[in-house]
Length: 159
Image (cartoon, one colour):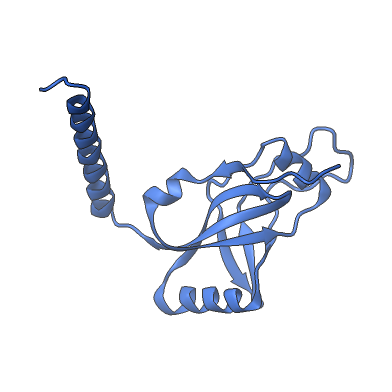
């Protein structure tokens, strides 16, 4: 059977980009069981309330929900178990250092399959204040209005 190519997104965390300012992103593998992979291939996962944390010099993903595989037997996995993130030692040390020194956090942004391997995109994030969120919404609305006016002018429909 040939390996699948490209990137197939399983789940994304839209709320993370709203609640946090993403400073940097990293691609990490995950240590998964067989039924977890099958459940992910069926497109079932949730990143709500998920976060990454350091323990014993390793990074772990907490709170990610992968529902039990429907055709699984007694070997099925626990839906919200802690999963180890697979990164290079240099990246792990860099991320641990940044989270300790400057109060940043690690937030999962997407879970996807890249060339057949389950991956998670984690972002080094800084929490936004309420006024930052309001500014972002106002800026997005203004940009949307500008695009609407530009599009109307391009079609010859002046306001």
